[in-house]
Image 1 (cartoon, one colour):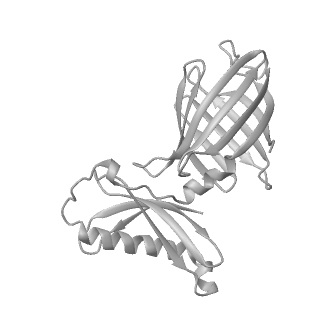
Image 2: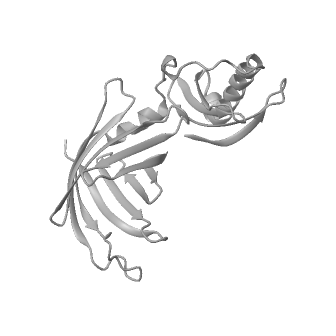
Image 3: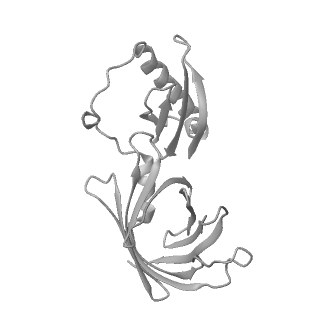
Amino acid sequence: MHIEPTTHEHGLTAKVYSYEGDFDVSDNAITWSATVTHASEPPRVITGTIPITSPAVAALADKAVHDAIVKTIDAQGAVRTTPAPQRPAAAVQPVRSLLHEALEMFVGQWRAEGLNYGSPHQSIANPKGDPQRWKSTHTAHWHTGRFFLLLDEKAYVGADPIETMGVMGVDGSTGRLFARCFDNRGHERRYELNVDGRRWTFDGATERALIDFSADGRTQRIVWEWNPRGRWLPWCERTAVRAD
């Protein structure tokens, strides 16, 4: 579950912090992570666990997480009344979070079929008027350490081959999900990812996607759009089915 962007004013320093995050409720505890920012300071990620000592705690999980985040901000903010010295990035050990766990949905071997509409001659009036058959296989597996997911896709659009390598993970500076993709035609693309239950969105400068996972996690319904001439047009629609 997601905590929408919220602000909090520190009671002692009067500094205004912004935060957003995610949390998960299990039988025994609520685990949460949040990204906190203040003015021009670098964003930082904080995490915590709230024991479930009664049914009321689980029922009021959203409020409990907000309170825990604010308490952590107040505790850390009181210490940071003067700028803290910057440590080299290599000295900061990343911590795995619920966002990393969410990427587990993509792990596996998949086969996909559908239609591709994008081409240099795509009609704005009838953008789906000249489709080509899409057929592909792709795999996703965790890199050692389970911080980054590695992707390998081999596709055919009509008779034309497209091969794409990619990586998905959590950006250490922003605390947000991302994907970077590299294909055999020389393109490199970057996307910001958002997840809401089983629905994922990929937002890029010139492409965007909506991916819906089935309840059993074995099917992906994938819809891509692109913006080749200043307006969004359908690019590709396909269904991927787990093959393993």
